[in-house]
Image 1 (cartoon, rainbow, N blue to C red):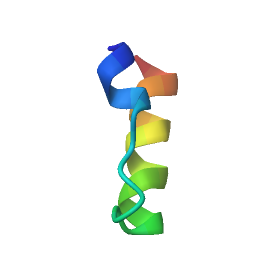
Image 2 (cartoon, rainbow, N blue to C red):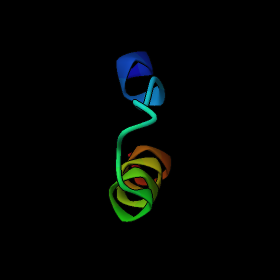
Image 3 (cartoon, rainbow, N blue to C red):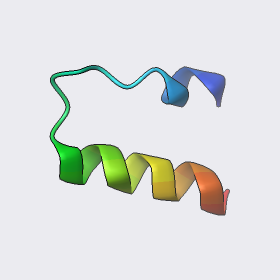
Image 4 (spheres, one colour):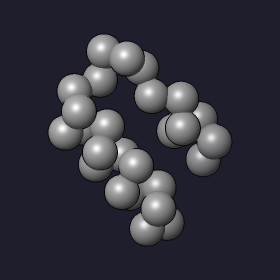
Length: 26
């Protein structure tokens, strides 16, 4: 999803990195 690209600024860097990695893998 494109919704996952909209990461809140309050999201911890580690969580944001995990989300980006998950998006790149899928």
